[in-house]
Amino acid sequence: MTGGMVCMGLGAILLAFVSENTSAWLIGAALLIVGLGLNTSPVNGVAIANVPQARSGSASGLLNTARMIGATFGVAILGGLLAVFAGQDAAAGHGFLSGLRAAMLFGGSAELVGAAVAFAFIRRNSLQAKSLEGE
Image 1 (cartoon, one colour):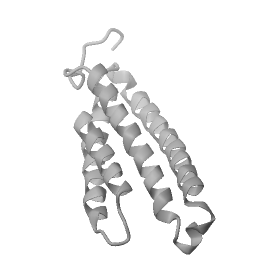
Image 2 (image 1 turned 90 degrees about the horizontal axis):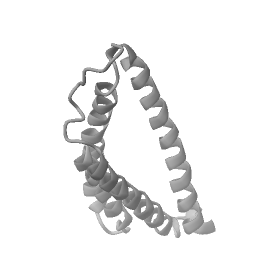
Image 3 (image 1 turned 180 degrees about the horizontal axis):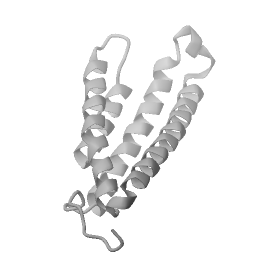
């Protein structure tokens, strides 16, 4: 899980350094996609493995709802940063890259902080199903 978050963070930060004359966006986008793939399944697994089997559907639904709410806030925050830093010239293409830089640096940094928190607090055996009372 932490590896996926690190890949996503590094991919976003790499996208912050894209210019008009570079193809680094391919590497950044690939890191983001690989990181998302490495992260999504373990997060779902941890959420399901740590609740009684009778509640696994509720845990999955709650996780997906929280993920959608987080994604909505993330898009709003990063879009706001892009708009603020891109300015009025973004429509003409002049300020777009500065807005993209700000949004990707913030998003990538937040992802790396999340990876550090996950590394510090998620147990190694968290994917193993527990025998919980009330099953």
